Length: 221
Image (tube, rainbow, N blue to C red):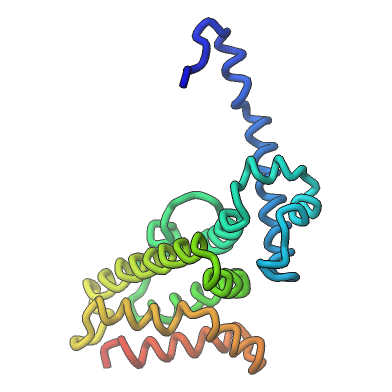
């Protein structure tokens, strides 16, 4: 495959990446992600077509496929954007809010984690649940789901190891046990949705439950 024609003027080669062009591309991606999330949640993954998303986002199908090569890729990006708040690859464990959690008062760590986790659930639980269901019949989504689960466990492992170092765990609780416990109790979107949708709990009440459970299970007595 040939590279760019070196006789082409530098200005002409650079025209494909300009601040305005990049801003338009970012705005287009944002519009597609917003439209996709809205339609996925309204109609389900299987019944939502790329054409419908393009229409909702006011872009052409060609533009859709240039930005996202498949519907599975698009759902993956919708979920990632919901979880991280952006499309960067920075793990949650390296973000400022996690660093503040780890470096904060030890006696407040589980309550603060529960509050942060609840804020995450508020914006992600419904779309993550949809992704989990869709992954049961879509190999591409299943692969992403498994990778996302492993990333979450890695993040929680880093958090738990730091809690152990700072004396926030009971003597008989290892950092691995703590990471597994937090993963099981606090990252299951179905628990959050069952309590808030079916039982009428407020997110604040859910946060209190998670904090109490983690304190009782992991903290020094």
